[in-house]
Image (tube, rainbow, N blue to C red; front, side, top):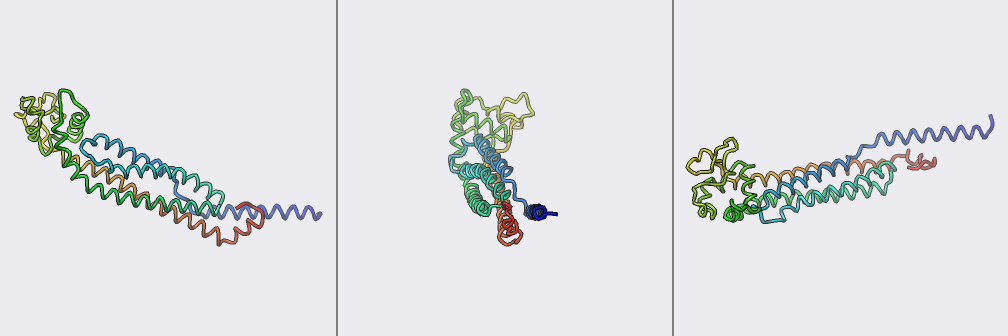
Length: 268
């Protein structure tokens, strides 16, 4: 056996050992959360909030309440970028890439904490906002030539199965009721199971008895809670992602097998 053949065998054996070490190290590393999936879920939550708020925006004047939803969508978009950085950094075992990944995850975590705080602040303001606005909306109702506000009232009364602000008798104080002079409420107050309901106050058993104000407040607060719970859940996932990335970084700097890979000419 020639010296050249021995050197070739030694080189091949070293490459096999280096490959085995690298495979072992990569297998031992914790898997990072999948940011692309998280981004899709966050964007869905934000879009759902926007679409739902569009049905109730006439009962709510403060547009700043949508700020948490805007932030949620922005965070979701950012997570797509984080996913690319995290995948590339993990595959190539780049210390700089992993450090960047951790920093961005930390920023996202802080942003989600801000979303939770804003969510609780605006959730507390919902009741006052609706109480201040709902009487004006009902006074603008026009059943003959319905505008956006009138359609919003009919939509809410059908969807939430309610009538009036506190009950159906509130319609007696509206401009529309006084102008029509037929002692009836809008057909949207009629129970869905009844096909012959005319909205007449002489048959109150045909009408929804519960008022809309409390149900609108409850619905808007539920929507805000979706944002809060989504932000809390994903903040916990971001913490897990940062922990996994930090473990990879620590192993990258302390495990002597990495030095073996570098010394052997294998890209780590």
